[in-house]
Image 1 (spheres, rainbow, N blue to C red):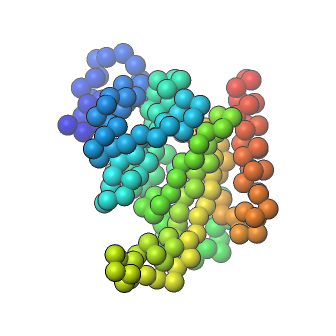
Image 2 (image 1 turned 30 degrees about the horizontal axis):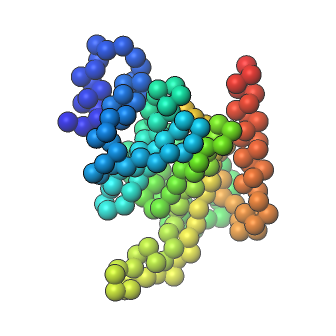
Length: 194
């Protein structure tokens, strides 16, 4: 029985959808076999699922609120990100294959939810993998592709706090993500004080 069927069977039980999902994902079953968990600090945890032989971040668990959020569908499409969560102006000069990945909200390539700090986590979303991604065990199939990532920040309820943005290597070398993180932290701080 899949997780959605389990939640449906809990229809008469108290709690929101996110609370029911949390109760299910807190079970030992979701920490072994095709699943594994990783602590993200601040009471947050990610549940990875192996899809096509790769560990993918499927769910976020918030142990403080006792809630869970589906980050990615089994089809490797982002469940939470939508058109308004992307800074499209920063993407306008990206190659078409990167834009195609972006338009499909595909989280297919190695992408990560980083550790939480001050209530937010950086998300690195890879739109084009390094050419070695395509290489087989014998070294065949490697392409000349250069890895291309975009970055955003999420809060502890998986809300997008800072839109996904493409940063040049020069901007990344100048630690622009540190500045964006501080801005996202200020947004969270203001929300908490309301």
